[in-house]
Amino acid sequence: MKNENFDVWLGIGLNILHYRKEQGMTQMQLAEKSNISKNHLQRIETAACSCTLDTLISIANALNIPLKKLFEFKD
Image 1: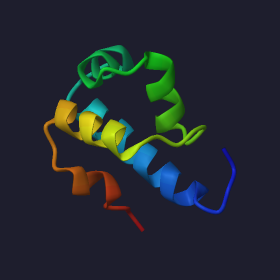
Image 2: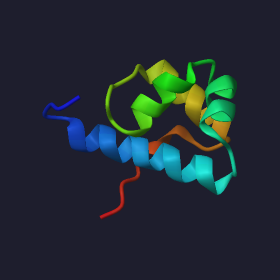
Image 3: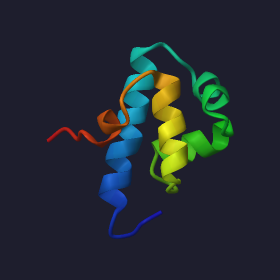
């Protein structure tokens, strides 16, 4: 996915990856807890696709973090 919002989606994907690894979760484990496919999670983490807000809420809940943490980008 390459569009005007690519950098935002990349930041969200990197945050998901960061919190997932911080908790020692595999993509499969997080995908199952979020009720999405592993392939879809992989594509979200790498900004190869976008997703719905509902999906981001499910991922944040599965990671036990506030949704806003996915939008806190590092400089």
